[in-house]
Amino acid sequence: MDKAILITYDKEDAINEAKGLCEAAGYEVVHIIQENYLQKPKYGISLGILEKLQEIADKIRPDVIVFDEILKPSQNYNLATELQREILDREGLILEIFESRASSAESKLQVKLAQLRYEMVRAKEKVRLANMGEQPGFMGIGKFEVDVYYNDIKHRMQTVKKKLLKAGKQRELHRQGRKRMGFTTISLAGYTSAGKTTLFNKTTGETRTQSNELFTTLSTTTRRIIINQEPALIADTVGFISKLPAYMIDAFKSTLEELTYSDIIILVIDISDSQLELKKKFASCMRTLDELGVKKEKIIFALNKLDLIKEDQINYKRELLNLVENEKVVLVSSKTGENIKQLKELIQNTIINQNPYKYKKNEMEGVVDKFGN
Ligand SMILES: Nc1nc2c(ncn2[C@@H]2O[C@H](COP(=O)(O)OP(=O)(O)OP(=O)(O)O)[C@@H](O)[C@H]2O)c(=O)[nH]1
Ligand SMILES: [Mg+2]
Image 1 (tube, rainbow, N blue to C red):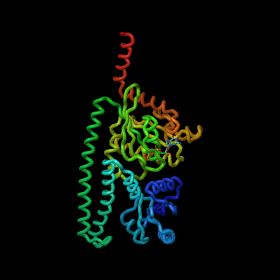
Image 2: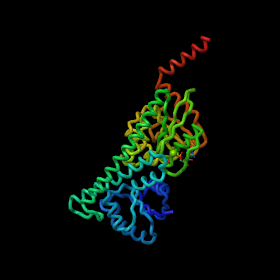
Image 3: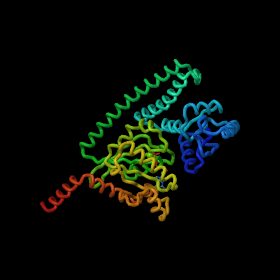
Image 4: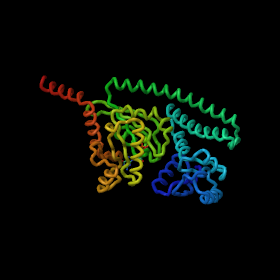
């Protein structure tokens, strides 16, 4: 396994998440440097820490130095030059994970697009520096080469986008088909590792891979379930993570778009997380859903991993998320199956409320049936 030195924030949850990301990308974290502030202009870290890092890196000889913040191209370049090692920032790390996980043709294209955008931002910086004449040979390339490089990325991005557009149209057709057939569509959303796939498996009897590694799921799978004696479709989706840059959400748009068109979103929340983590992840999920244009009324909150917390913690944690008054909350354990029935009932009631006419009519028909025959 490749070795990594990790530079992250001096907070337990940040450390755990960053370690999780490193492991998911296939790195063994051999040393951690914890800092309060990681956004100093030149290197992200202070000169003092840089010196310390240099010493440690000389001793440990890691394959990569992971920097758990988004680095500007110039910062990345400065660090790499000083340390003479590969520097991977948070974005680069997430991209590596996505790349290794992407299995469907569409998710591969999405990852490709995200990678090209990542490169594009860096190319733009190179063009800017070259134009300023400050660093004509920035990273060893002249202005002409930078232009060629930039245009090449742009061209490749256009090709990938076209292919994705085609895949998106295919999805749109599927969606229309499902709508015509009157299926209610339900999507599972939530932070990575919240338990979406476990819940999906529990409700559908499927056996998709669930794991405590981050970003286990990268593509959307849809299955039929019966709610209210009628078939509905439920989809498992890619997880969210904080500080996921907008362009990455954008790259995964066609997959995440399913959320925009779903009748119901089950937002899966890991209620066993620490207060801080819980709040941060929740805010991050709500922001992402908002960015995707998901209406609040469609969201059902599934507070998952109930088996891992004590009774007296429950209300406190609901309060923390401002979900005490909310009626669309259900506490579940996807592992033990506890309260899955309640979740289904909540889904059912939400569907009925969304289509009062349809279900009124069915009820009436039921009455006629009973008494008419
Ligand atoms: N104790 C407990 N563990 C759970 C529960 N639900 C899920 N898990 C565990 O949490 C981990 C993550 O579960 P997944 O279902 O893979 O999570 P996910 O949300 O699909 O994650 P990504 O696909 O990575 O976004 C796994 O190790 C599950 O076994 C639960 O209700 N209780
Ligand atoms: Mg999953």
